[in-house]
Length: 113
Length: 112
Image (tube, rainbow over all chains, first blue to last red):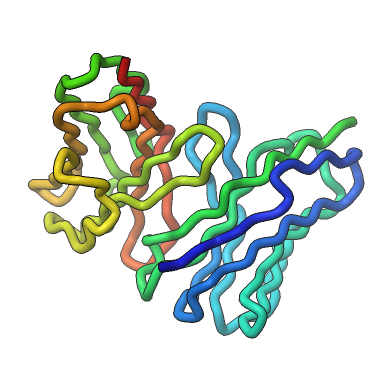
């Protein structure tokens, strides 16, 4: 089955700096790679996603890159702000169902003012 | 509300008891998912409904777990003979077919 590994588990950055989170996956059939932000006591919220036919996608301060050959994808957050502090999860689709996802273990991001 | 609603938000029960967790998806969303999230981990897929039928229940850990969605809207996750290892946050998500998942805030289950 699909296995998703996520690094680092914790990330502390100064406000204004960039944050990078990396994930690898094992199933070459995966074709959808979303990223979620989860705040304490809340459900995960989609922040950006990328499909397998695209190598890079950007939305304001957030960007995601995908390397299908190497089976890894990354989240980049630029100009970090204190409100970016949260747990971030990467995920990869299992088979051809975009809603059936294998999640990474999460990265706790702390942005200090 | 416009989001996915889950009740109860917190449930404490004793080992061996029966529990029901309810999910009210976003109106018009045909797909509904249940995930389970243990402390410090990412969500883990349990079951997926498309309309009224369970399209994929391969993530249910054993036959103590069962879920229904009789009218294609509200879903109930049922856990029989609860065990301490069942303690987790149970998340529900809904989507239009092939679209973004919208998660609820979850039901935190504690089995004493």
